[in-house]
Image (cartoon, rainbow, N blue to C red; front, side):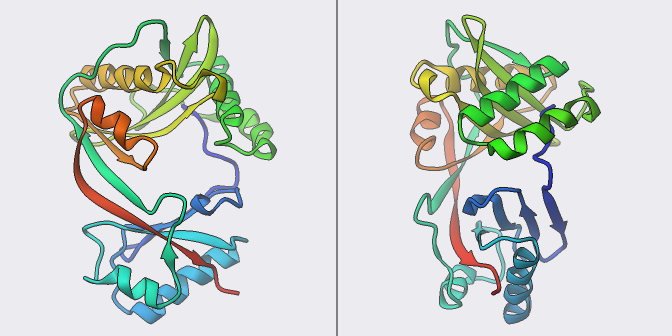
Length: 243
């Protein structure tokens, strides 16, 4: 399994889940599973937490189960704004086999060599900052590789060259897809689609009933063509950490 970026910090409470990753990019910080009660207190506390971890900007991720009702409008009134890069994400589900892709081989990461290859792909694709890569490579030997682990990473190869990665998080009934990345020079050659099919096969072997993805504007159309159906929308709001 691909180790998390060194320095990743998470806080899980009934009110929210906060995640900070060691990158200045806005999506590296997010507040999710929002069940806020005292809005003024909770908003202030979330902003302060991200500030304490050195972030300037972060995302509020507001899904259909977020509470209270009207939370998005409250966040905007408090100074947040729809994230200009990708403000609306689709929750999508696939329950039938997606198309196969020829010319792309996909392997599940089950060795240090494949873990190192996955890190290099993520760096080349701009997903992992170069300054974090060295520590991630150092952590590979300490990462669990059990086939029963709750998460697996996959690496796609074209003519023996590692060119793409994707991750599966295993739930009780289905599999959540995350962490997709492709080297820029290999985009448009079916790498993303091959990684979807490989993770479908892996899910089927594990007795899972389908795949779930959170799709932004770049992947929503591709996933729809592969048979995914949109079942909900999630909205992202950019906010400033407490000064």
